[in-house]
Length: 266
Ligand SMILES: C[S@@+](CC[C@H](N)C(=O)[O-])C[C@H]1O[C@@H](n2cnc3c(N)ncnc32)[C@H](O)[C@@H]1O
Image (cartoon, rainbow, N blue to C red; front, side, top):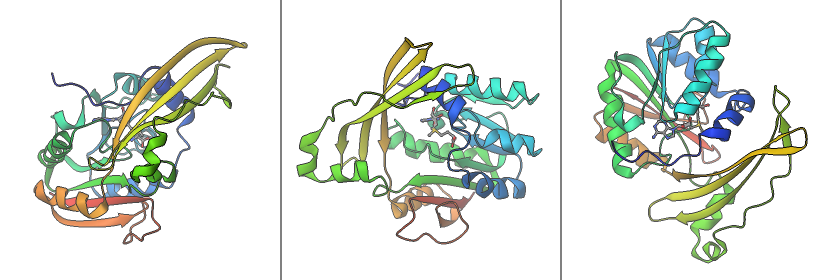
């Protein structure tokens, strides 16, 4: 078994996501849904706690999910159970994807390049290709490297002298459905512009009735891809008719877009 991708989506972070993430970037849900409606069955790669998967199941669409984090999958399953839904979910890193069936659509939202090596990212693209039926569609989004101004400044050598950042004290608390309070803080550890990789650390605290019940510090590594670089990688993995969409709308990207989606056919 190879070393798993370095991501922070475990333990308290997974619990936090399950509680608070459903309303995040809501426009992404109808964007991917239109493609799923045109091509089923579909696979949600790195489905997390089901922000996209669960609405699609509710809409009667045939979608499976997978994720590297057993904690995220467990939370997703729990949420699905509560609604009487029974998705086929598996715990697997995307570069080892080997699903039980073939798909008409595979989408990856907010997850490509997390914690993996470049070789694993290329391997993942080949796995997506193999897991699609001929003519099936891949949708792969990426946040462009210059979108996050907090991180982008550290691509400049003189700014990197300030790294690692000190960990801020988690201040704002969010109240979960069971009354527990979550407080989060994160810091940038390192940025390697040659490898296009940023490492961040998150501190998560769980408070109950004024007392600190649990705290965890976890790291995530993010590899950033430029849009045209990702298009070439997707083509190199054997995909055809590769096009780009900007910010989860079916239109060509603009320099103002923070996300780019690569849409390709097997
Ligand atoms: C930012 S969350 C996005 C979750 C979901 N796609 C969404 O949009 O709500 C990233 C997810 O990717 C998963 N992940 C990170 N690296 C992965 C990998 N190499 N293979 C599979 N899943 C991965 C994490 O466990 C986490 O659930």
